[in-house]
Image 1: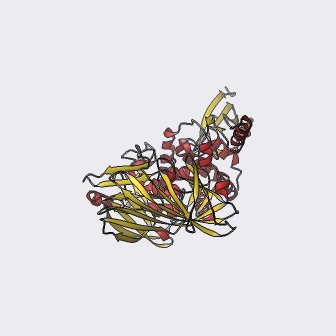
Image 2 (image 1 turned 120 degrees about the vertical axis):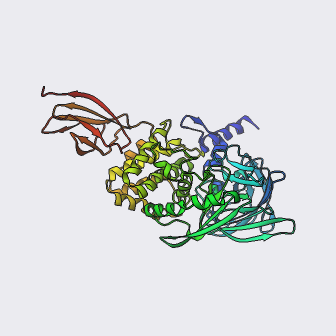
Image 3 (image 1 turned 90 degrees about the vertical axis):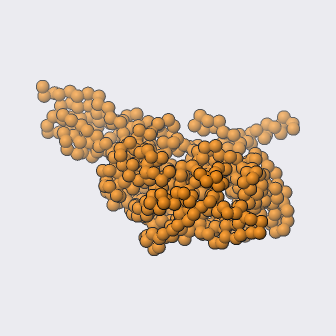
Length: 551
């Protein structure tokens, strides 16, 4: 390659694919994964039919993904994602075998048939290989090839963060979801696969295998698709919810059946609380499932995976250290809550994953609030502050598949709890949460859309609040000085122009103040002796001076 051509290529790669952000170096692969490339932008997903044959003997997968899509613009080059060591082996459209090339995890398919705007097209992508083994699911994505206590195979997938393309070919970016999906999984007898949606059919074959066909009738995000293969037993019940009868199914290992029937009674309690706060369960058509797995759990859509040992807390531990976390099963409640925020309302870019995790970390407090009262829920939320690091911004770098800080959990929850105090109307707050689930039902959304909705419905300018807590690492500090009958106060350690209403008890009497970053004065008839900030606002406090001028 000539020097001139190389310089042109580097120029294109640098400006078309952003490389730097938040002091991290990003690669072209990060951009191919995390951005809406020209090879993704021209087509819109409508359907997947994922067929996979699982071979436990050599830890391999093989199969086909039929991809349905609508043509937005007439182009002929399509990007499909599949990570090594998995390989695409053949691509067919309209009985024509197509050529394709590969750049890392991105595969580029050259289409022969004319791609006319608004046409619905289908493409068959055949693949095979030994997918990445997850050594620490769900924090490291991949497939876990384990065995249960009876020595029977237990094979499960979990791939949030690392990507669904670890084990199946797809359009691996959260902005686009198929409208529906069929999942057909073939496994050795007598094992059973449990996936998303409803079981349409279970076929038994002469070669001592079976194929389960699971249909998802709603849009589904890539990482929400899962396979769970084991020696499962099944039981079910019905929850009488806001939209009628909701089928609840439970797939567990046989020796845990008795424990599961007791512990999983909390599923109906979860549904009751979250339908109160968030509105109807978003996937009545596909039902609700809990599936036992070998790792703690994950929010796979309509197929929530569970491995919390049939104990309350998180593996028996109260993450809030307040005692309230011992009263419910953390994994059951938290992961199921993601049916509303993550599966129904999904982030457009993983940089905005706070939309998933902040609301559902806060949902734990709302669950406690619903059953044990407002102060109990607030105490739980305040207790989680010990888990906050304030290490980096909650919102990550856009277009490079970059998540923000893990503070999206506890800090994000406390931000929402703080906003609830600012709104200062619990029924209005509840209607805002329910309204989010109506406004963005089954959609992928950006952070700004959620922020603007909350600002609009609250009637408050909360942009500085979101900027402070989501895009900055500092805890805003309420600075004050007492000068006899006068108090001077302001916000410090914050973004420029920061303004936020806060409640303070001054001489035991509540006052609602709206400090800015410049000094303001409050004068009382009597000397100001005590100032105590409302503990439900996630802020710091610094007393600069207390000068009693009446001495």
